[in-house]
Amino acid sequence: MQIVLIEGDGIGPEVTGAACRVVAAAGVRIDWVKAPAGAQAAEQLGEPLPEQTLEMIRRYRVALKGPCTTPVGKGYRSINVRLRQGLDLYASVRPVRTLPGVKTPYEQVDLVVVRENTEGLYSGLEHQVVPGVVESVRLVTRAAAERIVRYAFEHARHAGRRLVTFCHKADVMRLSDGLFLECARAVADEYPFIRFEEKTIDNVCLELALDPSGFDVLVMENLFGDVISDLAAGLVGGLGLVPGANLGSRSAVFEAVHGSAPDIAGKGLANPVAVVRSAAMMLGHVGHRPAGEAIERAVVSTLEKGVGLTRDLGGDGTTATITEQIIKNLGA
Ligand code: NAI
Image (cartoon, rainbow, N blue to C red; front, side):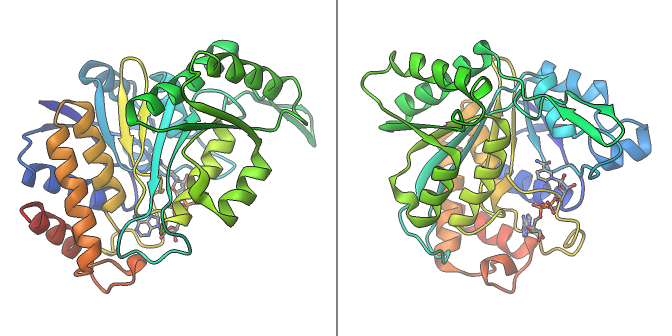
């Protein structure tokens, strides 16, 4: 089976390398087709997201991706945003759950953040009106709003989840989130067997901080989803743990929530768990669910035993030691 591999920048090659080792150890043979993207691609090829990379993902349909660096406030547009828009990977799915052995203020967090990935404030429609005044367009279309909420309900249905919370700010952004909310209500009516609730995004933040255990599936627009994904990751032990998928009707790109972590890049300190778990999700997507589940169990067992863990998990190990432990625990 051929799957595209984007190693990415910073800690990207270290953590994707670890994930490839774990997948091989789980007994799934993949011919990784390497595709360039990120700051390194920009430097070497003059283009951070070469068309050939998009073509490869269109062709092979599935990719595992490391994080890519985006310059702040200057330079090229976010590769991640372009990739998601270019391949119409409209649903970002991030399962967030408490893991054994990872100290957090809460137990029993088990939720999924579903984020609209192609529009909202990340639509890339920004311009300067006059010097000192800029406008950023917050794009909401009925088609995209309905399909993301429908995705959230379908996900809930397949995963046996009972509640979908739509997060919005329709009281202030009356037109854009007003339309989104209207679409969410209409789609929710198609699923009378799944509970639906609507909450303002600020209220959701408060409730997540006070008691996240009440949430199940959360669905929202792009920017809110970006912020809530990181917040939710923090609730279960940090960015190094949470996996993610960007799904479209044709292609899928699996990647961690975290970025390229330039502060620890090249030092062997990166926690590969989030990318390893993203690879496990990817295996489920391509028909290797048992191998994906075995990897997830091996990660849980590694965290439980607490041997070889990286610093962010309170250990004194490295990317290599935790990867070895995950591989060792695959057989357990
Ligand atoms: P970041 O996630 O790279 O780092 C935030 C903090 O978390 C840092 O202290 C870092 O050391 C730590 N951290 C992140 N991942 C870790 C891991 N696996 N193991 C141990 N510690 C980890 O976020 P930041 O600093 O805001 O972004 C850095 C770059 O990454 C930026 O250029 C940003 O645009 C890019 N980025 C890319 C993403 C992607 O490709 N999907 C997602 C988020 C950010």
